[in-house]
Image 1 (cartoon, one colour):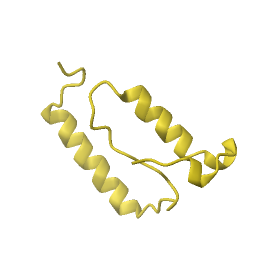
Image 2 (tube, rainbow, N blue to C red; image 1 turned 135 degrees about the vertical axis):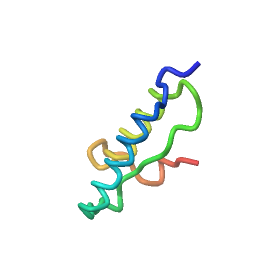
Image 3 (cartoon, rainbow, N blue to C red; image 1 turned 60 degrees about the vertical axis):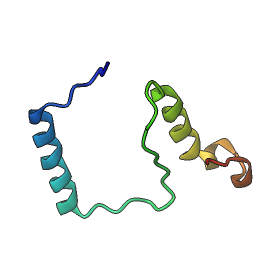
Length: 69
């Protein structure tokens, strides 16, 4: 069961947003960590991983102690 149904209208909106961002030539910080969620019902876990990985310097976590496979 999907909680979010991808409809044609959403796909059109997503394409427009993608083009807008491409036109802005946005530059992302190379230290930004991002991973795509590939396992169902892992939203919270992925959110926590993103939070920890992108705030290592604020949390005083040593780089070598935080390994993501």
